[in-house]
Image (cartoon, rainbow, N blue to C red; front, side, top):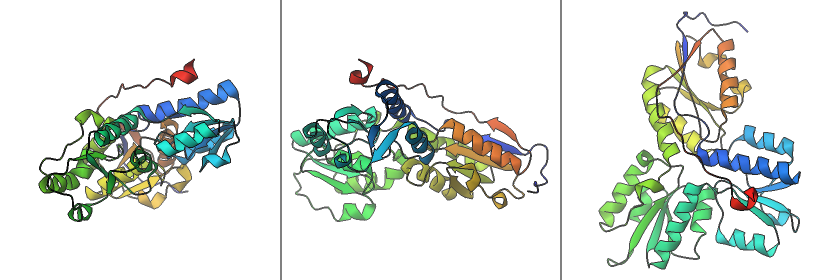
Length: 316
């Protein structure tokens, strides 16, 4: 392949932070630890995280990804994905005698607990999120009734509750404050007394990665997002950079890159969704460099030091 003629100061700018968040790191470690302790097969309900590279690596080690618990033999070992599950799924696992290791992100678990508490306190709960996303299904499935999905501003207009109704809202953790701003404004306008989630319930990683893209995008001519199509937060990163006026592409393998994306482009920006490993990001950087010599420069940004411990029943 012919390399592009680029000046010596052509660069790849690396967003900071990017890649794995603490919840994803913990979920992957749980599957790996279970494989090490018990051997294959270890069953995982749904993709442990939304990244094809990660899922394929774990599958090669002996993880078996299933859509439903009926696919797990009685008494088998199953890991719940980082997105969380409904109470119905937990009950099903117990009835089937499955040995469960819960990889639900602790930040998602906090939202689950909030939903249960608010419903017990007599609140109607609105969940801002995307229909069909496993996190949304898991959160709404913490209670039998009283939780309603809001995907867009138009959904707010269709809500009809009595004036004395106690109303609260929560959000899908892979959505940022910026993404939900218009919906939240519509909710607070229609329901002035609505109870909002505490700031600490909002996923730090989603917001940090989007803030890093906002900082990076004005400095580059094209943005590459490392992430899989099923990843909500990766899709949002690509959409954000596009909104900022920069051509943006999402890939989860080096061979998906196209040389024409970089033709005549001096500065390339690269970020990675919260479920994309750094090893994959680096292999994509190396592939970009094959199209033309480029220096790699890390941009300043938030340094994340959050860690989550493994489940107690796995450690013991």
